[in-house]
Image (cartoon, rainbow, N blue to C red; front, side, top):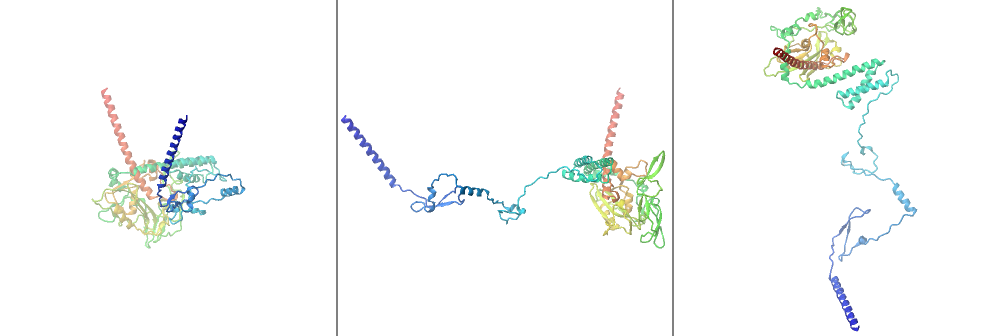
Length: 548
């Protein structure tokens, strides 16, 4: 027993000695070690709620933290305490209810770059950003008007129908919504019966649809090859005999500057020149004789009562009668229109002043449409506007012309020219002739309707002419001729010369002649193909019958 106790005691003393030696070794190592500190300042990121600027931590030579930043290493932990105090609650509520300042973005994208980037509490709307609000296009609605005789339901249906028509012919929604109410107001103005209103709506609808289709066909017709168009038009060029029979101006070989116009004096009576320079004339509208002075002033103060329409033939109870299409009045009766002065149609001296187109091998073959407007002067009828259009319906030349004598009647109902239009015009007939001769040569084809009147007014001699009045003849033959308005309505489904007393548009008439000939060429090709097809079918039928 004693031996065992002694051995245990020795063991315990050995363990204690080992522990002491280990502690002494660790202590010696710890005391001998010298830590190395980085003397450069260390940047510490700012925490939530602190200043965004990075803080610098400074150390002393011994490696200890210097200054107020000692708390960064050892920050005391504070437990959360509930705000039971009324003062703290009041402070929090004040912070929540206090107005907040709004920081606006930079104004560089709106105004100049020298504006401040932030504008707190800006009250000027010029610097505020406004969100894009799309346009909400609503269909137009008929509003009730006092004294209206057409029911609102009928008017609204017609208005919706007009909107659909405008959309069909290619207008945008916005344009259709603007044009339809205006058109509906025109239909409703002065209308007292429902049947009349619906009739007006039907006519306006059909007219809009026709005009829309004609514009589409017109855009297709304009894409024409000039060489091909010129070669096909040669078939319809008027020969010399037809030019002479239809009173076209032809050259006189012995007299340069003179023209030969057949049957001109039969159509319109020449005035009787008197010794004092005055003239005794016959009115071309009402047929009365009147006198004018040298300056074109009418001697007698007499009004002109005439019919503005053309003479047409009708059958009434089996009897053929001639009436005017303006008022259905019989020929020889009192006129339905009134003018201040009498006028006469005289084209001036045809023995001089005419120019002839020249020939040139360097100029390519061209096609133009020509239309002129005339007015009545002291010398008769004279040119006051000329328009030249190419084969693609683009205006080449359009100008007003000052007549050589005093204007008696501007003929606005047909010419579309008023007194205000002619103020300041200095272009003379010679100026127009010079310009026209620079475009038209002897090999150039000119299109027009009743071109003999235009060429006589311009005093131009040209024989390469295609006249739509001869290409589309009247069913009763010459001297009857169909009007350009009727031809355009029948074949092109287009309405022209529809401005009433405002007159015609020479550009519109010239473009109509171009499109009529394009339609004619296209129709002739279709007829040729169908006739050829019918011929082949007939030949096959004959062969089958022979085989049987």
